[in-house]
Image (cartoon, rainbow, N blue to C red; front, side, top):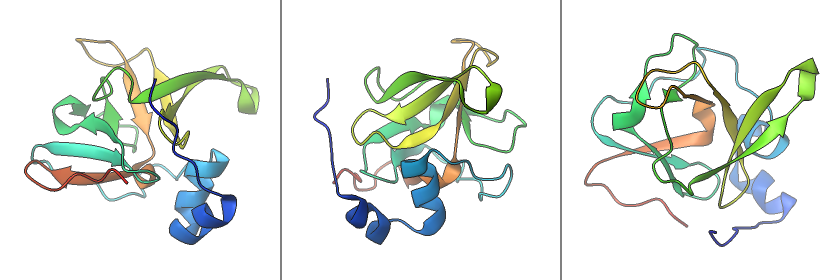
Amino acid sequence: MKEKFTKSEAQWREELDALEYKVLRKKGTERAGTHDDFPKQPGTFYCRGCGQPLFTQADKFESGTGWPSFVRPATEDAVEEHNDSSFFMRRTEVVCARCDGHLGHVFPDGPQPTGLRYCMNGVALTFEPDGGETKES
């Protein structure tokens, strides 16, 4: 298990803009199609809250939902999944395993090889092309 990364609520509010805070710390959702798409070159998607590597460009696909979608996390322990029964729905929430930041949800309707669709909030991610510096704090 990864060592948890913690900050006070005041630190989170200072370091994140209003939408990032709403999504990552309060389990909000950005509107579909409102986040600029990330570059198409090879690279890694990191947690906006703590800089942990979460997903790779190689596992990203166009789901048509308006949110960045991936078939799997970058590593088995990059994210954690929890039951989410908010808004009268049964879903599986995905959070960063390091800082517990809300990222989005995973659904069983993705393409092969996993059949999963990790539907993430773009505002919760940062992208670094291969060859760049790592983002871990």
